[in-house]
Image (cartoon, rainbow, N blue to C red; front, side, top):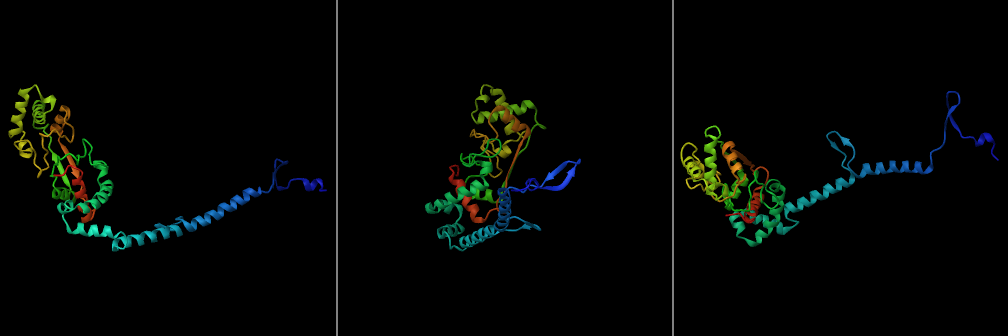
Length: 288
């Protein structure tokens, strides 16, 4: 049998206050093996996955390296036409055609509708919505047939390539509040808005301002108020309002003015991608 001294728990030899000792109990075996396991796991992780910073980059890891190699190989096959040859054939045809010819080719439009949806979702949907319906007060609807700069395939293509900068000057510094209200009443009457009815005197005064040199609205929107796509001036007779057609909003537009920008995509997308987008946007239903 073990002596009483042997049965005593070993200590580290450190004591405090004369009788407070630190036991030297061994760690549980399960805890030791778990710790060793984490060390082995860490080493394997460092080898397989990106882990260590090295200058301005990092260790790639075996799995990440293989993944990138496979991706590069796939992209090379796509570019050389070894993968998805039908896609390469479609792109080859698109490169040789203008947007009108693309729209006239039903088989090519099948490719445009699938590829264009992806391009639209990545580049256009954040502003115009996934279906192209736009956001009132910010971005125009691409499905309603009311185009500020024209809805022909060539117009849409030019808009995508060069971008657009719209500007509506404010009139609060040159017209009185009464004059601005009269102008709003006239424009509301052109679009058939209910709030513009019942006050023919103000409507008549608004028409004088619209057609006269004091407000000179006709210079951009035309004598018939149907707009000017060369300038991006909207049609005021179709009851389609980008910023809203209620009286208060129309008055605010006239007083404060409006401005908007459509970015150019010629430096962001390839020529073929822009052709695909132009045909796709036209096919949403609002193209002319």
